[in-house]
Image (cartoon, rainbow, N blue to C red; front, side, top):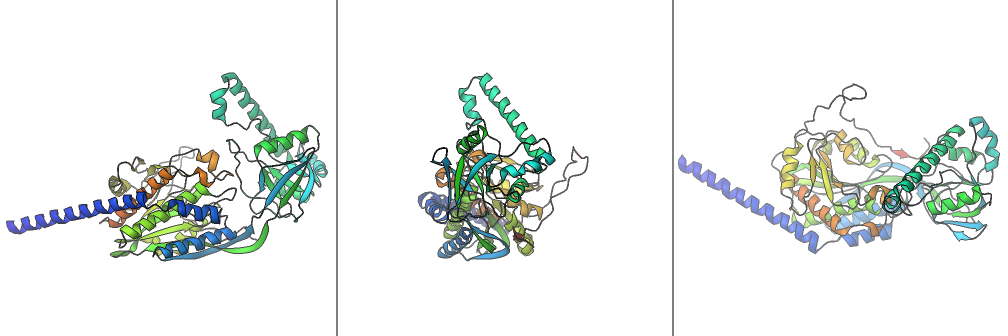
Amino acid sequence: MKKQLFAFAFSSLLSAGLCAQSQEETIKAVVTEATENSQLKLLAHQLLDVVGPRLVGSPEMKQAHDWAVKTYTDWGIPAENQQWGVWKAWDRGITHIDLVSPRSVSLEGMQLAWSPSTSAKGVEAEVVVLPEAKDSLAFQNMLSQVKGKFVLVSMPQPTGRPDENWEEWATPESFEKMKTERDALNDAWNARIKATGYSSRELPKILEKAGSAGVITSNWSRGFGVNKVFSAYTDKIPMVDIALEDYGLLYRLADYGDKPVIKVVAQSKDLGEAPTFNTIAQIKGTEKPDEYVILSAHFDSWDGAQGATDNGTGTLVMMEAMRILKKVYPNPKRTILVGHWGSEEQGLNGSRSFVKDHPEIVAGVQAVFNQDNGTGRVANISGNGFLHAYDYLGSWLSAVPDEVAEIETNFPGAPGRGGSDYASFVAAGAPAFNLSSLSWNYWNYTWHTNRDTYDKIVWDDVQNNVILTAVLAYMASEDEEKTSREQIVLPVNSRTGEQMTWPEPRDGTRRGGLED
């Protein structure tokens, strides 16, 4: 009996040693492939330079999906585009905005997403400031002033310098004076909008009905030369965003009575409706094919720039991790699936639809790893309210090379309710984790802006995230245990006094921007 026990113990130790050695070798192979044969820059060129921004419903979005399927197929990874809905189809085309009087200069700006097109010759008209009225009735009586004019509807910023620049160079008194003046301008502008009787989203259509030639915004993002670029709210007239510096020029000219005239050529195309997709690729599991490790990144972007850090870098991380795993770990224990979700920017629509349409996959989720907040090194991971997340996620992280795993963790954390696609899985009770990155001034310089371009990518940080993701996927696939889904008891809401509840799953919007 003792000999048998010894033999069993020796066999177990030998097996454990072999497993440890195999694990060490696999992780080393991941690091070697990521550092010595990186495909990140090639993938970035193909996606960001050649395809470009990926607005849902645009031809570029479909081109990106098809490119991803071909790329995975070339790597020997089965992939497909899964349709989950339809969306208003629109092609941006070319925008030219020029000041033609009292002097000539080309202005920096672009039409907003889904903006109506001008004719090929464009529209030339005077620029005026949104009328200031004492109340909504007075505003209605003033609407004749905007007929045939481009209307400025954003607050004129007193400075295009970010606050940190002021803080570095200005006297404390000057900095405080500027902020006070800016706050006063902001309050005054909000009062001007409120007096119209309409919200800032409603106003463009009111101006359109009043016969305006177009609507001009400037959605400054608190950085040098950077604006947020979102969607238009008009049906027939162009709606454009102009950079702070040039918007200020137009505002001052109009405010001083110089009657500026601009010419706008916005050759966009309304293409009716287009199917919307998620691109799904997977390396099939050999032992537990119905359990899933999911790599997650939204594929779409706003289209003020290339969508490089939102979410080009997240996309690149997941694609490169899949390529590496296919090469060094071709026969995973569990299925490793990657989801490139459509229309995250309009409300997590692709991932919510996937969760709704594939309950069998959600039921088999071992873990979801999502990345979606810029080019920086992953620095924080929350347990998202899963009571025992530390037991497995902590174990997997311990296998990540030390130079990669400089990560702050928060266990058990609280369930994420939005912000990115991991929340779609969390709401369905599946263990899903956001790989949260260092800022690199993401929120003001590249998030949804006209400066979210290839040059903002920090390649060493993205490579770091590839290694992290690939190792976590490998460890989650190899884990002998299925992950626990037990949830924490949420606290009482201090504001309402009511017990907080776990977020509920929601279906995606299946018909976006279309009349029912």
